[in-house]
Image (cartoon, rainbow, N blue to C red):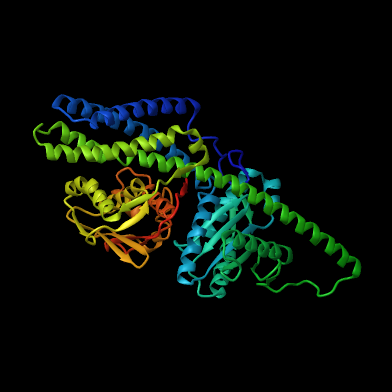
Length: 536
């Protein structure tokens, strides 16, 4: 393959998203920001006179601007890293990391709806000869052409991913039976078989395909990929250019007539047994190498997710902090009630910023990729009201109506109040962002037995059916919503999912389609539990 790609078709894994100089600059800026915020909090903790109020406001404005610049720098590096971390540079198809995420989502959906899907392992036939005889440049063009042809026969809701070298993986969703998978496999082989001319060479493309069906052939991503690979290997050994289904240990059902003799001389049988044993050992070694590479890629993904979430959290409190600081600057010093309310907002957001910066400055925490939940008994009604109050200036500016449906009295929950506020602040901000002016947003809390169900709904642009499954993925932005994203890179909902799961809960999304609004439902177990750790 081309020198710029590794065996998996992916760019070399970077040691870090930031250079050493960038790290030093960022660390110094964060330390200064930490000092500014500490001084501002100390000032806010005392009774405020007009001069002190102006001084605290000035410190907060400077700290907010500095935090915004730091967040921008981190997000720029993350955007660059994301472009190379989730796409194969040669074919433009999703790489192993993104395919693994799609597989996990497909498994969760199929388990919930008792559905079926298929995993195809596709390996081009005679590709080594093309590379050896015609050169790697021609080989790269063949891979691009093959990827285009394979992708042309699958639906938008399916996924084609380059796994390494000339190997591809396809996720075919929403199957009614094995015959659907067989139909897709035949279309793939027919598309590849069309006459091809690459760099002046007339070539005949073919591939061997192995198919594993969920849940019959596996209930986790690793098993499905391994069984599809085994079926592909059997297909290539017996009848290249065909497809087979996986059925049990190393066996599969043929998809084409095999013109092999039913018996063989004793000496040939012995040689065949030795070859099969050697080939089996090679397959085992290849699978182990693949597993090791996946573990390294997963470690990189964990680091990227953690830095992305911390950068997002650093930016999240800035809007209410800036608005409150601006309002403080224009306040009449005699309006004590308004001053106290704004002081409360600023104090809470400064506390959040200080906590995030503390996580960033803790090198051990960054290396481990973990954020700690600090659980304590909280009133969920108060938490939700606080989230709404923080988002109200944005809703007012966008001329949107917020409707609350909260039970009377307290609703106890054992959780981290800062992280809970982050969850519902993100959901409300997301609803507002994708709802046009004059729209309505609703937040409802219902106690159902031993669970709390919180719903954030809107009358916005809605979510297309093919985007629902991946909406909580990191860096995911649907094309139709790009005009509303306001410069975001698709982190907020990923943060929501991680924090909800860290609290032992689940979050799902429903939408009837374009312009039909959306509903995000967070379900939290209403049970006491010990402190939990969120892996980033």
